[in-house]
Image 1 (cartoon, rainbow, N blue to C red):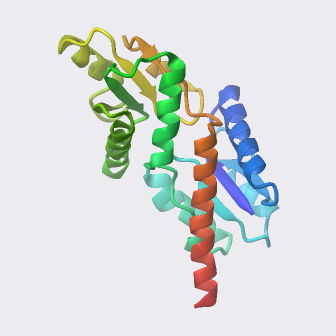
Image 2 (image 1 turned 180 degrees about the horizontal axis):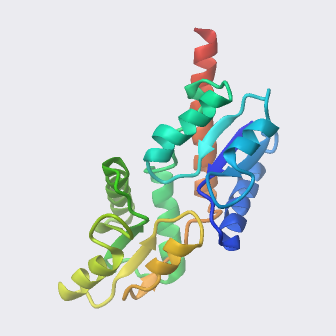
Image 3 (image 1 turned 180 degrees about the vertical axis):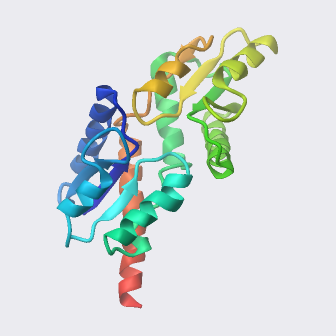
Length: 231
């Protein structure tokens, strides 16, 4: 079983987007049971979901775009409380080339032309590992697009997306594209949409590349659990 663990949000559109993503995951692998839970602000909670699937030994796939406290502390603690070994926790989704594919497609959908400089807008974090992940994702997207991408952060770090867009415009780029590095709509996506960028892409949502990445992370963790069992 694949148990997807999302951040959670009071925004109903965010939960709907996550469920659409998991519908795409199921369509790619119909034989695999896929369930969803949330770390905060939505139900079922992670603890509720683990109690509901007790005995099935699920693989937890964090629907998180970078490493941080949840991946290092919260999720391992939940696994331990459920009596599951750490290999049952898959890596976070990002950074990964499949996310670069999805981000590039969302930029194209926004109408951004191939020559426009790009700012990657992430949620931000006080965790250096999370900030480094966003920088690596910007490098992967730059490689995909064939032009520079500036990483930015909506909280706890600089530059902010507003600063990064303004800096590019002052540097002589009247038109700038903003790539929204969020899985779903919500508070951060709305804030990112208020920059002076000419084009702002939609959140990643149920993009097929993201669904393939969810399954890839599941397969990675499943292989680790099988290796542990065989040891």
